[in-house]
Amino acid sequence: MTAHAVADGRGERPDPAGARLLVVVAVAAEAEAVLRGLPGGSAALPLPGGTLHRALAVPVDVLAAGVGPAAAAAAAATALAAHPYALAVSAGIAGGFAPLAPVGATVLADAIVAADLGAETPEGFADVTELGFGTVRHTPPPAAVALAARALDAVTGPVLTVSTVTGSAERAAALAARHPGAVAEAMEGFGVAEAAARYGVPALELRTVSNPVGPRDRAAWRIGEALGALERAFAALPVHELASAPRID
Ligand SMILES: O=C(O)c1cccc(C(=O)CC[C@H]2O[C@@H](n3cnc4c(=O)[nH]cnc43)[C@H](O)[C@@H]2O)c1
Image (cartoon, rainbow, N blue to C red; front, side, top):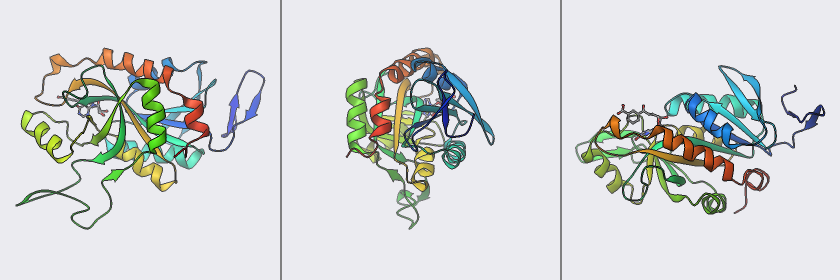
């Protein structure tokens, strides 16, 4: 199959340039949950260092990138270099900030924030923008967030990208104080958004909550529940509208 074509059982038909969603997850179990939520099966397309799963009935490609912002950015960039996309979506399970996002909740980022990219100073944490570098925030298209949040009955708010999973009440409180309204933390969103920005592609982050952000308690994880919610979220996501009207603000 050529890079920009879709098999539909009658041979190949052109894939309108850019009119697809790139969904970047961390691990295979998340990719499988997303694909279970989409109709029509998928075809595997090789990418450098990975495999893109192209849904056959809807305009969605799914890529398992690995854990963390660097893996997410690198993998997203390989897909964005190889295929045209209308929208990139960082998706998967996450920690939820209580009481806004309990276990099982679906959250959509209205800001994708690198929460631990910076330096410790005598006055406390300073993010890289305060040090004079780069950015720590990407803003998803508000109309796309609103459209998806309505369809999914999702909680919206900042979703934090961290390289170290929060494991204490103190750290959870510090993050919540620094990022008022934060609904979740995960480890890939900022990486996907950084890669997408370089290709002029807007980004969303869609997460389902597997655990509370706070003291480490593996017994409290509800990964199966969060993967089920992820599957239902992709079954309900208005992918055609999001793919064909990406700049709907
Ligand atoms: O060992 C632990 O205590 C621990 C706690 C939370 C998450 C992990 C992971 O290794 C999962 C990383 C994976 O899942 C996403 N995720 C899920 N929950 C969280 C969280 O509370 N904070 C950050 N990331 C989370 C993340 O996006 C990764 O893909 C281990």
